[in-house]
Image (cartoon, rainbow, N blue to C red; front, side):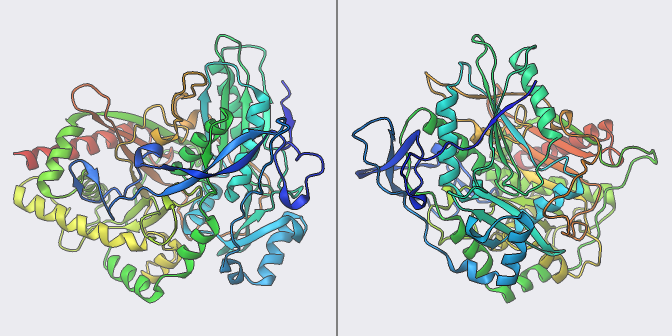
Length: 587
C-alpha cells in the first residue's frame, strides 16, 4: 500500500506572497460579534494543587476573555472579499538569539534565511522532551492521536482546514535545532516559504481489515518513521475505511511542539474549521509566551528557590528488581483501575484537610518511593502544566504550544515519609498542608530550566532520580494511551462526530529498538537531564464510573528496570496508599 501525499494547497492565483490566502477558505473578521470562552469550552487546566472551593479550582480567580471572531468564507463565493490575516507582532525575543546562532540553526536545516519567520530559544519543556526522545532512540515522545469520524471524510475540506490550522499557529510551522550540547532553538518557518509547505498531509487506504485494524497498521508505520526535525514534526494522516465504518484522522505531533492541552485545542479547532464554523480570532502569541517565560523573571530569586527547595534531598533511584538481561529500550506499560477508594471519597478527604486530591496522591507516592528506594527525602520528576506561572500573557489558556514542563520535586523538610503516614489524623493533615504549601511555592518557578535547576542544586554529574509523576486529576487515562486526554476529544456534532479511538497501549506500536538516522538535535546532551532507564507514573481518574469514580494509574518503564508484574505491584501500592490516607482523613 502506497500512501498518497500532497503539499499544502496553494493560494488563489494572483494572491501576493505576503498575503497568502488559502484557496479553500478565508478568515474574515466580524466587527461586532464576540464570544465568551469558559473553562468548559476547551477543558480545564488548573494547577493540580490549587485549593478547591465548591468543587472548582480557583488559583487566580476566573476570567472569561471576550475575543472577536473570524468567519469562514469559501473562495468560490464571487462576493467574498477577505481581509488580510492579522500578523503577530515581532517580539524582541529574537534579539536574544545571536546572529551566529541563528545562522547555525538555519544552516542545519538547509534552508534560506528568507524562509524563516523567527528563531527563538527552546522552552524548558521542549528541551526535556527532546532529551526524552533522544534517550528513547526516537521511539517515544512523538505520539499519534487517532480519531474515528464515523462517516466518510471530505478530503478536500480536511486538507483546507489543516492548512489554515498550520498557518494560524506558528508552532505547527516550527522545528528544532541544537547548535551546542546545552543549547537548542525553535525555528519558525514562514507561512509562504517552500520549507513550510512540505508534505504534512497523507492519505492511506489498506485493502484489507476493519478500520481499527487499518489504523493500527498505520500507527506502527508512523512509529517506525520518526521525524528528523529537518521539517516541523507535525503530520496528519487520513485513513479511509468503508462507507459503513467511516474514516479515521491521525494526528502526529512531537511533544516538544505541542502539549496535551494544546492538542485538545488543535483538534477542537480542526473540527470547527472542517465543519465551516467560525473560529476564534488571532491565536495568542507564542513568541510573547517564550519571551515572558524565559526573560522576565528574577533569576536570583529563582536560583535561591531551587537551592533551598532541593537542599538535603537524597538520590532516589528505582533499581531493577532482578539481574535479568533484556532490550534496554523495550518499554512495558499498564493501566490499572483502582479498587480501594472512590474519587468522591478522596475529594471529601482532601477538603477535610484543606488541600486537593492531587496533594494526597503526591504524599502517598512520596511515601512509596521512600520505601522502595530507602531515601528519607526522596526526589522525583513532576510534570506541570506550565501556564500558571505567567499572568501577563494574553489568553494563555488558549495558547497552542509546548507549555508543559518537568522539574524535580521533593517533600518539605518537616514531613517524614519514612514511616506510615496514617497513624495520626492530625499529623497527616499537618503533613498534607505542609506539602500543599511547598507545591504552591513551586508555581512561580514551573518554567525553570532543568539544566539550571540541577546545577544550582549541586546534585553531581548524574540526574539524582529516575521516577516521574504526572497527576492528571479529572482526566480519564484508559482509552487515552496514544497521548490524548478528555480535552483532546472534539465536541460531538450530529453531522460530523469525531471520537477518540481506544487502541491499547503505546508500547504496542512503538519500536522495540532505537531507530537509526540523523536529526537536527543530535549534538544535544540528553544524559545531563535524564537517565537511560526510567519509571513514569500517571494518575488520573474515571469520574463516570458508577458509585463515585475510581482512580486510574498508568505506569511505564524500561523492561530491564521493571517487568509487567513489577509495574502492576507498584500500581496496587499506589492505590492502597491513597486509600489508607483517605480512610485516615475520613475517620
